[in-house]
Image (cartoon, rainbow, N blue to C red; front, side):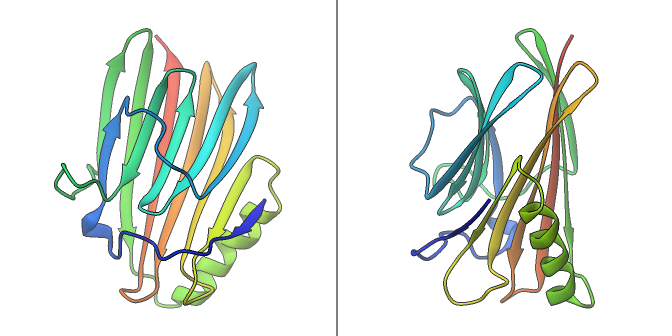
Length: 161
């Protein structure tokens, strides 16, 4: 699913992003709910990046006013009955446009994905794609910052312990 967003994004570079778990659902510019293995996953694009909601739990990767930027490269933690694994990396692809176009095309072809295009550049996108995995659900996200040539890729897995 592709959605054109008619507002400026609040984050502008990878270093502005932080990770938070358990925040209430924040105002979303676009949403897409999918059911995977009996679990409903709500993919949410925020003006400040993304949020994924599973029941009363959430993962938020965004420019948050009360948190310093800096995503962990890898983090594992137990939250209730679930094990959560989060990975993030920042790429600066030599052909930024081609790489972002590849992400957009892959997500547009996936019924369990959401792509939001921000004004100013067709390469200013946030994309999310959900899937099932052994014992749980997973999602990947991409945050493209054409002004900095940065493509942030995250992968999260939530599984029962």
